[in-house]
Length: 470
Image (tube, rainbow, N blue to C red; front, side, top):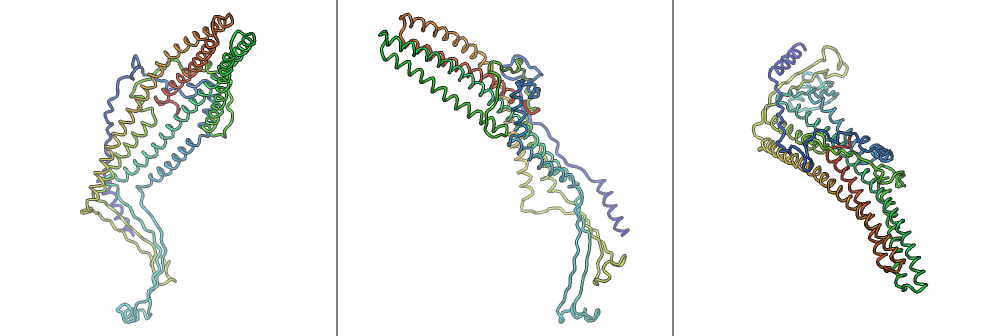
């Protein structure tokens, strides 16, 4: 046993002298990022994405919805389970450098042919026709990590865990944005149905005036029919808006992990507020902050370690095996110590020579996969920059659209007043009144839509910059 101990100690010392970890150095690809985002005046280091979602969204009802979504959304819960699964694999990977140890107990009885040499020998020396063998032993197997294969395997597990972590953050940013978009869409529908109901009152008044004029002979029955059709059209619109509100409430409820139900809200769309200072920060900071881009970079780092593993598989491997325990050919003295003790240690170096080109193929495939992941990483960065640029141009354009839509609503509302006065005075016909009311209704509905789109563009910018997971 002393010799075995000395042998193991010598091997460990030798390995400590020659061991070298071949973890491949990682060089971040040249991403060719612009100095600043398009449609921004200056390159500002501050960014709205650094704000926590509770700071970005100040509406208490929206905050409550987002909090429920983060807690209960099923997509997010599934992502968290994936993180937990990867975390278990990461824990297991930490033990890869340790030896495999097993314990086995076996009993064997062999009866050779009496005409065989073994059979005759047994009868001659032991005076019996069978032989027994009883064994209880610990078995140990260990591969020295000379070329860093195990280190790279551990790195692969770590990268896979971090990928699931970043994927969870990416899901949360999407959930937060989707809840905010749905909430703002609901406020828009509230505003539109309010506009439609107000227009219904105008249509009802117009119909009443037209009926009186028809009864007095100042207009035809066609005017009454047109005014009635206008009123019916508005009533139809209200029914459609009520349907859309119910569907949007159901969608929001499902997003926050609840059964379809009504969503309480106490403010109108005009009362909503988002940060007015929309600073984007630098593109380079966005790359490190956006979870989906970061996840793609971790995939690249994983493939870099896979190349290291493929390289290590082509080099010599040093493996040590050992076993020891008690052995006897009689069960009654099986566990007699020290007579039944035995042990052995074997250390060997194996060098793959000819594997039908399998090892070289594995290495080349790993390198190609790394190159593919470099391209995928660059593409994810390009897409992210494009999303930020789209959100910026949408926000700037919608600012102008909102102002023009507001001016149009003011003009058309004044037009309704003029048309009604002229109609009562007999200087305009019913078609002009109905047209003015229809145009005003459409303009107000469009203004509500533009306001919602502008809110959505700011939310899109927040998500595109990597905000929402804090």
